Image (cartoon, rainbow over all chains, first blue to last red; front, side, top):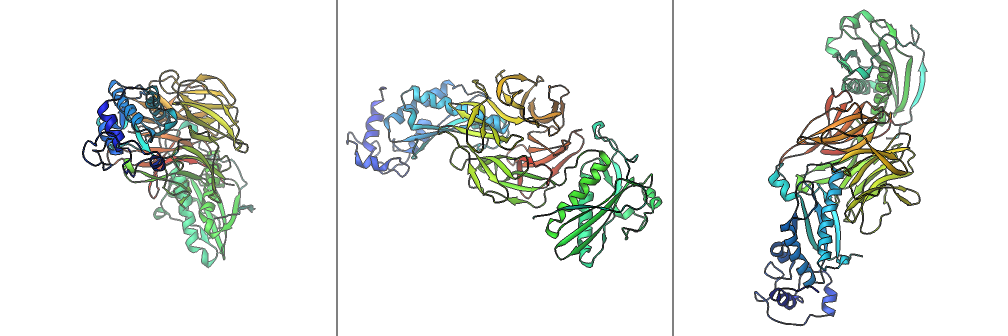
Length: 174
Length: 435
């Protein structure tokens, strides 16, 4: 078991029974209500970005994505730091599962970029698993160059498109 | 669209069928296209008037589009063509510089169509081959025109034709970050577009079966890339077997049509596999930590060309169809991908990325005689015409408004054209000649 920052842990546990429409396993949460310990950081949890157990918090505050160098799938120092935060969050919020999406910029053929996106997603997944996140809570998918988030054809956009995004999901991972 | 084509010989008037002096060898690259005339075919029945004109225009467009031929516009004609069986006035065609002449006659009876035609060498005043006729139905009239054009093309070039063929591709709308994709099928010239899937899931890289009855493609329908096989006639599809936690893509049929070669990603590593379509039994062909993808069979089915970055950058390799040792064939500067074996067996078409540009190129199967045919911001994904003389591919334009279109280029690299599609287009796969 990894050491977790106390404040985050306490807040997360406190809010874990709050309603969250994006939440996976709502039935399990009801069957096993979390003990109420501590107090919420910002009043009553809303599932919004201020709720540390929310998807929005994960996406915005923890950071849902890591970026890669051209044609690389090696995690950068910044990428590892983001994934450390993701691992901590996922260990705390153990009823979430995630799909890690690997993406490439448009410089490359469709097939190669699908394979490259798979490498990137897998690099992020392996790192999370190495930090203790159970592999069965994570799945990977590659979108290759099919889903850029920035659409200009220059490095400023390409740099943001070469990414692995951890998308919290409520589906079965079996 | 069902079309029964019946060929029969029409008694040729005048000269014997011959291999006349009118011959173009495409190998050398056509510097000066051969001028030809296709006066509107004679309408032998009252109902045939419109069709006679339309058929003639499609035939002329097919020939013109090759770059091998140049059409003499009807406005230049001196001869007044109106009777298929009347003697041809060669001096009148010579006077407008036509070297080849295609004449024909069309009759319509209800939904039945009959087309007769002859090809002439204007200079020597002789027939090129014998007169021929095709029968079909009115809704298949474009195919009849393509059949005629294929025959004319074959007689003059000595090559097989490619006009009576279809292309399956991905029809695209919307900006790059929200692109909607669905499978479409059309005639090679962009006519008769029909959609095969909706755009609810991303679909990629459809590939025709060897006889054109089925299409393999990749879809995100399940949330993950998986390979589907779709029956073109019934539009019924089924997913091919794949293990949980894997992604499969880049499928192609073997020449027998019974096996699929494809890429499978597992644990971040992408290798090449084959699967027997009937049994779902799969065999792993490559086993390296490198990316191995974009496999394509040789026409005899004994070898597979594919791309791998095992050397550090994507390059082309050939291995036996059963796997094993692979030999590298690409050694130029840059990155090579999407190799496709020519139906003639002589060349491999590929995508090459170098100095920030993309090219479609061809090389011999030993990697020699590499030639780049195109250059743009992003060209990729070549597919061969049934006769191995033309390549169709995807061209995507740069920037925020970037869009994909289909282009074709002949193997001399001199005849580059955009293929008209109602929406954007990518990932074309050219069918064999239709039966």
